[in-house]
Image (cartoon, rainbow over the protein chains, first blue to last red):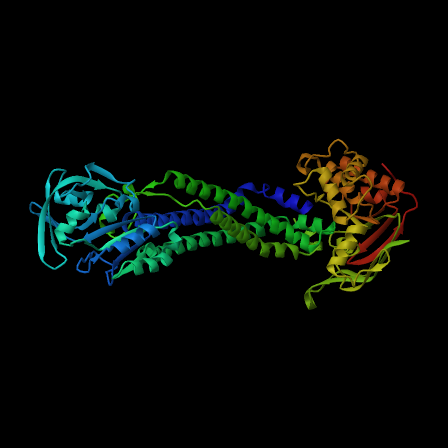
Length: 406
Length: 234
């Protein structure tokens, strides 16, 4: 107990020096917490954006449907039988049929390739429109809703006409002219950059689908069950393959893993710097207090007691530095887990390159007590580990030399 | 009864041409109740002898006995334990733990020795401080005490566990004459009234005047061992 008391009070004996040594611990713990909060928040953001705007939990697509690039072939569009519809009604929380195509959009002399979504009335049940901001109206029959980027690039406004030129299911070339009902902004570059929305029947007519669809998107109770549900879904909708949200966003999450690893490396590098700082601080303390060590040894303090006293001082630096780091990192992640970060503002001018990246407009960092606890424990462990060597050195000082040290 | 004994105890440092005999075949017995001074010029070996007796150091050759126990064969742990039980130290520079108050410094000695006095550690420490005239300054940190007061705390710390022997290494060297006299008179009083055994190293005449036995050391050997029939007090 007395060793604990001395170690605790010694923390304030060279308060400025100890505080400086603790800064690296604070930074290391902060970087780990904030980095994980940012990365996990970004992952969750991408997952939600993928589910809420592109795939639902599980979707069916034609067998062999491309998984990368800006390709929306419709040649293998499939019919949705009554049996499939009944199965979907019985086994999903919500489902919606879609036709996706990649027509050329033409307005005046300008043209660009867009991703055309033919969506049914029940689409909003699978793809919520909370983030939708529509200038004008949602599209009625024979109208289109244009994403904000193509609208800007093509120079169209609500009320203007837009021509869509596309191959039909049978391979014929077809083009139709549509009034623009509105301009859509969601904050998700995957939607805003290249999308044009129309009713399912409008697109059916354009591509001559004759009731066939390219996608059936579903929602189920728990997204973690998507893989198991996908196998049943593919069997219930003939000539299709099921793709889960994980299939769609998984490769991107794997790429994000690199960033997460970098945050960990940065955090650990800072903690290693902290370790050397703390080792140096404790070693200096041991040399400065050699006479005190000798006095304590002369009074009966065993070597283990000296070791424990200095290790405790390192531990205290880890605890205090870790707590400050947890406070800062936890405070930051909590604040942005509640209030979010406006990605729209951050991505201004850079979103064009993210046509296939699902991102929601607001990024909510992940506030994780588990990460905070782990980062704190790592900080404390590093600090205590760093103090072991100088503590051992202190414990080995001969009492006879120590009592006479100046 | 012998509290401690050196038998042909030597402490050498270095080898060959750099060999230094800090203590050279010292034969010395300290009896219960003595008030003894080791005297000699700087570098004569006083402190080495005190370190051997105080179990802070081990002899290169010869033997050291404390309370009849030969200590050469003891490991560091056992030596530390014996030191904590049997010996109290008073240092030239007081050596109080600066982050502890006066009473906590005294308590520390009790805690480390494993003593469990009646009434508890705090009461025993307070009484020890009261006995050296610091009953009103229990909670002062060392930096808030004068040199004389700090040395009194060191005396209380050394005595509180009721050791068989108190070793004082130049206890007055860092004190002005008034404070030094006060501390010495206190020790002499404790020696006479409580029978506490004191062993000093010093070349302070003020200390030697009060000693009942003066052992002169020169070049690591005992040059002269004087018993003084009556010694002065302040």
